[in-house]
Length: 134
Image (cartoon, rainbow, N blue to C red):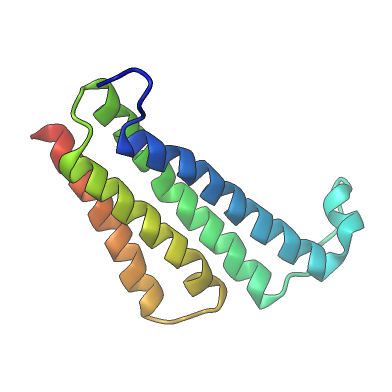
């Protein structure tokens, strides 16, 4: 692989950082909407009011973080072992696209679809793992 060309997995990894920031931003903006900007700017020592939307966005962020470490590890492992591409790249794309869809599905409380989307993202991780171990 040319040193100047990023593998698909590393490209998806870069985009995943933007997705992480989108999760953080969405949750923070919702929390600010519930409690005012001064709450988020301060030490946050007082009890907080949270809307159902903020609570869902907080859980969505937590859920993202639960699988994010595995995604990062797999993307990097595929790169350093020279196994990038193929099923690994497909798995990375599936994981990323499913995680993009997961955020609004969770935020708006769409039942069942959210679980299906999560399962699709898990399938993406499994494809990456399979490629690494083959």
